[in-house]
Image (cartoon, rainbow, N blue to C red):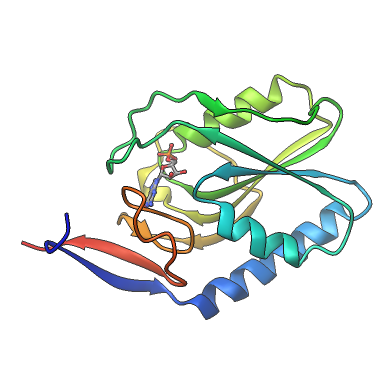
Amino acid sequence: MGSQSKLSILFTSEEIEATVSKLAAEIRQDYLGKHPILIGVLKGSFMFMADLIRLLDFPLEVEFIRLSSYGGGRKSSGKIKVVQGLQSEVRGRHILVIEDIVDTGLTTGFLLDYLGKKKPASLRLCALTDKPSRRKTPVTIDYRGLTVPDKFIVGYGLDWDEKFRYLPDICVLENEG
Ligand code: 5GP
């Protein structure tokens, strides 16, 4: 990559902020008084998770899980495993998974399956971005943010090979030439 790639803004920080506020309002309405556990999927969801939780002014718990997925490239291997697991007991709790992006759905599908086996009281998914054109396995997104085209996006926590996570906007990473 390097000199061959170009960034163009897909969603500005203002558009992201409005989306996060909308999602937070929906989540607040459904989870107030339920003391949910929000599980952020590392690393891409960390920025979204922080902004979202700042807007949720009721008791909840925060967890993170790390799964292997892309491994530095642009293509998912389709092989998924838990690299860093949970500290909290999930059984009987209201669980809300916080994803940066649902692409093929393989990672999220695996995670929902994995968590479902732990018998939570409820299990839902919030995804900041959704790339439906690439779906290989159906995934129900209960709280959906922005729909993205079939392009590789970076910024607002999302990386390409650990680069560009710091960008405040969500950008398309395009190959030139
Ligand atoms: P899936 O299993 O749904 O194909 O992919 C899920 C993971 O792939 C995401 O959590 C993310 O890490 C990575 N991914 C998929 N599409 C993109 C993209 O457009 N940009 C970035 N940065 N990561 C992506």
